[in-house]
Image (cartoon, rainbow, N blue to C red; front, side, top):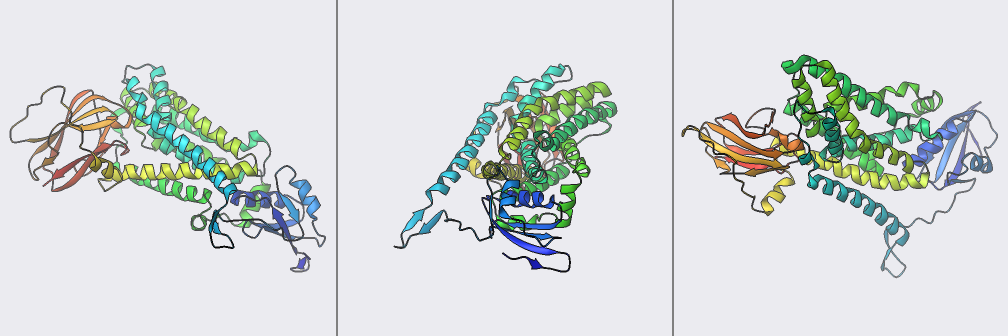
Length: 480
């Protein structure tokens, strides 16, 4: 295509390209072109199979030159439109019969099976309840907190922290997509993990120093934070699956900013992954809350710091696996497309999983209600009888492993003094922090044995007793 003269010193050229798989390919081509002398702008389009180049010189950039620049990345450039044999997943042939694109079907099936396999492994680890093998208190060794972190990394915490890291991997991949050095591409991942370790050490010390003077126990704050993160994760997951309207809701930066980022060494962007890692200290993972509670009770800066640092080191292996996998699967354009599909499915699941839990914390209808309605809840027996004043009505439940089980009636009378009796027979992880929005504020840290919580005189309504993250299947209490 002939150059179009935009003004006295700027020229536009359109070159056609084959081999783009996803939006990341557009970013890669644009960034590599913007590094060439005399290139003012580049706009690659996956839909049109072309890249428009604005340059300061009239001479054409030849496809042969571009093919040399992008050697090994799987792109092919041409001056003429390249016929792409694109077929939809499901179509119709000349006879009107339905046909399937077997090649695309195989690609999608492989990615889907891999994603489902990872989710299956997640649920296996979750249901095995490794937390039952860890008993933590203020006399526990630092090694016990490291093991607690290992358990957290393969439990419900992975749905939140791991989902956040997986979402950030997409952003960092696009930011460093034109970098060939693995060590440089790994820079934001390393900064994220360093920021996490440093914040857990420092903020753990602050907890130990101030003791009971502060507490992280605001249900509304946690729910708002997790909901915002989950919605952002949802949009990132849809973007990875090439849903166009999701891309419009989270637009890319203007061209002049991406050009500057490509040429300035990205130094100014290092603060973001550091900050993101540091802020994970405040995400309400049940295991994190356990470690924070012991650090808070330690009354010592150094011991509080070491408790949280050892815990953070325990979560590190799982997070490193996510980082290394992200770097490996985004190293080549064809692998990036597979990574986008698998990561998109995982992120969508984790975002819905987290949001469903927060609906439970808020006491609102959720998918957990269908599971609850599908079976008759098991009834548990209290390990020791509790006798209170006859004028007080009781709600009795047992906390065991990762479950809350009713041990008495779940329908009570409104306006009558009520107490909740929770018999902790070995609660683990998130279930050690009780939440029942509307019945009491914040979270209640359970201690082994019987815990008696004064509910005052509850108003009529339906309430859910669940854990701090809403991951434990709730016990539904009806007040009428």
